[in-house]
Image (tube, rainbow, N blue to C red; front, side, top):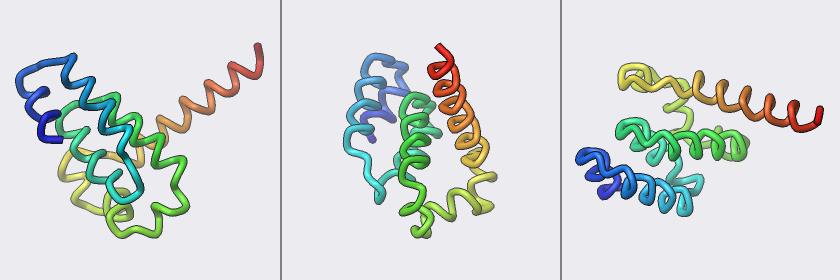
Length: 105
């Protein structure tokens, strides 16, 4: 994550994308909230999108975790400029649209 931060700071897009891919490969239910926040802060949009998909896929286990509940319902998320509920809604809508379009072809 530190390298992702540096890549973002110095606008090294290729390195940033590589870091996003590596982070996505190591994500789990314990690290996903931290990685998501980091991705949003450092404008790692592909990694943030991956995290949102991960959240949707693992929602049942994540709602048991305090860190996830704080991310979704906590006031600090709004203060930090995050709107995870809106992001999850957009991700879900996009995926549903994709499934709908694919099934109509």
